[in-house]
Length: 212
Image 1: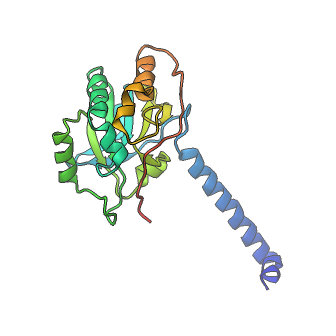
Image 2: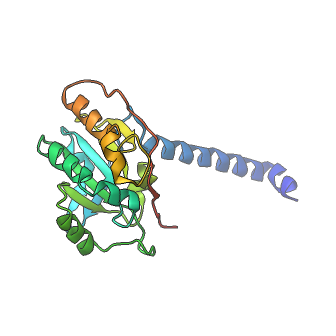
């Protein structure tokens, strides 16, 4: 029955056009997604204080995107001081650091903006802003998969690093001191005008709880 419908001359043209349009849409979506070595996708979001933040406003600066979730053991590991030290070190050098929370509102891990701001204050975080992304739009645009998941974008707007914060995929804070910190390494190289020696790694952490 389906074959007879598709093989009708008029329906065949409609069906073929639908395939072409679907393929084109998929191609456009793929092209818009973040990829190392390509222009980082622009986005607009609202931070935990209610201020609108547009990524393109930071062109001309190095930008770090850090996906986070206070309830994730891997985030807890790095917020024992490691993440804050990175934020303080590099925002002092002019880097814009955007933490992003893509946890959907139906998740038990969802944290309201005021509580996220209080958590940042308690942890003495030095991020430039905490973006609320409960729709998941920004996270899916960047293919963010875990908390933490880290990205570095250069002043020309090109994504130059994507992946893990460091080389030891564990929730044990004792591993931090012996791990290679890819974010510190990458930012140090980039700020010195050098190419990043490790541009992509496999992220580790808790899966981001996106909206269904």
